[in-house]
Image 1 (cartoon, rainbow, N blue to C red):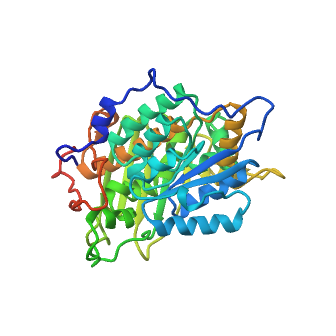
Image 2 (cartoon, rainbow, N blue to C red):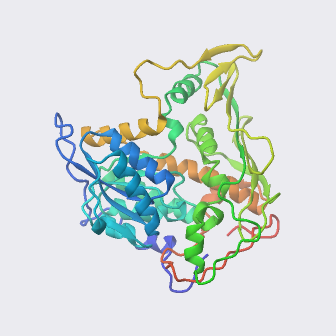
Length: 433
């Protein structure tokens, strides 16, 4: 959606110089043989549960880091995160009230506070804007998944990835299964061709609603549209991307992984609202078929439905066996006989969330930077292709999708602004934007 005289990601892309005389390089922290010689100051944008978790893993990942600044739209979130992290890391939290920033522009104040590393965990709708600002400021970044909620955001983040590479920045992704030792070993086996050609993929993310609004929920009196929607962000597509993007994106990322991070030819999808009612504009279920050519298809099923079968599984089907995951990784042949099962290596870190931060900070220290922004943007785009195929009812090709200009909201919304919730899309009626 665009409004007159508003700055959105499309105009932002046209007016931003990717690399030029004003390029800000990453802080010179990494020096050969000087591990932990400098204190890394960490800032957190988005103080919800995942943000607090990311900060916890960051503080555990390196001996010489400090939590330096916090930013969130809501003061209560900051206080809760600060209290939790102070209790667990008393010697690593150096974040006084003057470096606890509240509001929609809090991220800008955090970037000016002297941080070296930024953890981005606010609502996905803001991530293209937050990522671009961090890259322009020359900060190393951990970005939670997904990185965007629309194609305008995708194009912005692809450009940010180019800028980050030119500035020698480390950017780690929140697609945590990519750092799971079990999944790494299993995917390495099927991608190596050990079990023949990959013929299909089937991934599920079936569960109940996550913090869903009640059917009769209404905006509280005295609260603006934007403030309420940001507070209840997971219920609104311009902020969350919808459940296919915010939740099921892990299954979609594993599909992308299995297909060598190459885009499909097209997607055909269904979706709708089986139980979800009320003011939210989101669907509560999707079924997507991605066409890759040579008879290879990837299938994704997602739903947020109460009192139904729950399942979070991925299956990479090869000519000589099927890899099952992600929780317990094993391979069975066509007769159902187990031919491989992951065995943890003694002493190896198994917590995938911790692994991603350990590798992220090790890369910053060594100068061998982790650069995952482009990869996670591809997985987010794959999810958005499926969502838009369901919303439009079309067989949507990758090329046509990448030419779209869907922009869910202007980037300069303020807490006091009016911003009505749109009606859910109707396939075959509402055209692609």
